[in-house]
Image (cartoon, rainbow, N blue to C red; front, side, top):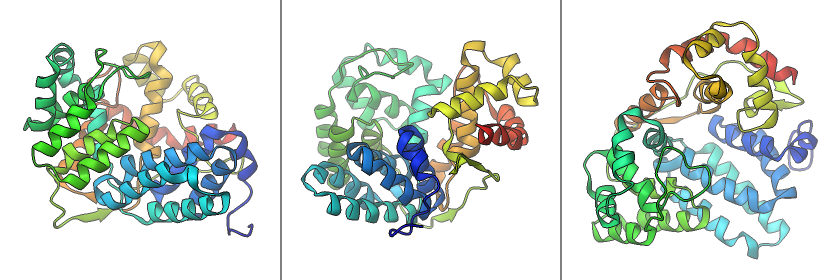
Amino acid sequence: MDAFGIAEPGLPRLRKERWLASSLLQKAIRRGDLDWGRAAARAIIEVEPHRLWRRLATIAAEDIGLADLTLVGDAVAAYRSYPQMDAEASWAIADQLVRRLVASPKDRSVDDLWSTAYYGRHLDYERRRYATLPMDQVVEVAVHDANVDFSAVATQYALGTTRPGIVNFGVRKGAPTCFFDKLLDSGYFVTVVEMGRDGWQATKSELFGLLPIMSRFWHGDDLDLETDEWLPTGFYDGVPSCAVDFFTRPGRSALARFLRQPSETTRWITEHIPPARHVEFLGSLLFRTDGGLCKDRLMWSLGGHYREQTDRYTHICVEDAEEAMKLFRSDFPAFDEERCRG
């Protein structure tokens, strides 16, 4: 332990593997693990302060969401203001923000809505139609349509789909200023809209556009917290193995190695998924089975609906992935042993 009370063994590895540190930060926040959350944050801020502050803002939108909109706004404000901080103040504020994110209830409904808009097979027609619909009509659907799925697809186009990495959408420039102004004119809560606008301008994450959309269905009454049941995991080179996911180099390597071994999961994937997408698909199963699980998840009707939707469409090349998820949960101990081996 060092002066900050942070466990040291994984820090050298985290400093060298920036994606591993970023992944661990998010997993620790989701699981309520303060020590590893602080360790990952310190490893990142020592090497790439900008990455830490942007990461904390996007984690707030993705994993805290409607559970604490004030906290989401504070994370965005910290990202905006960090260039004016000296090193000591920067770590002190980052440390307090990590503590708040770890302790907060979690709500991933906005991210699950985003996944549904991107991958839901039932929205193929809307993704094609809104690609050519006049932009003022796209904004109208985004802001007013009673079908949240349609509203979410339209929101992607209203924000623009020209950024790298966007899939399943036609390419459109978007009209984000018009979109956020329309939200204000339509009676959405001013504080939520302006927080969304500020977050979008700072990070270009679509989640900040979807937060106001989802907030119109949010009442905040009679809500329960429930902790997801995650399976036991080990350590990869001194770091909790839950950090080793599809978005890290050791994670992709472990996924590929596991697919070369006989298992019920491998058999199912071979039968249902094109070979070029095997690793990506298994990575999506890993997220739903391990990486995306949370302590103190907020339970509410629409949030539960979109979590089920995302589990079903997880995510590529298949109409229903529930069977694959069940098989992978059974095979998970063998996979975790493989990724811990490195």
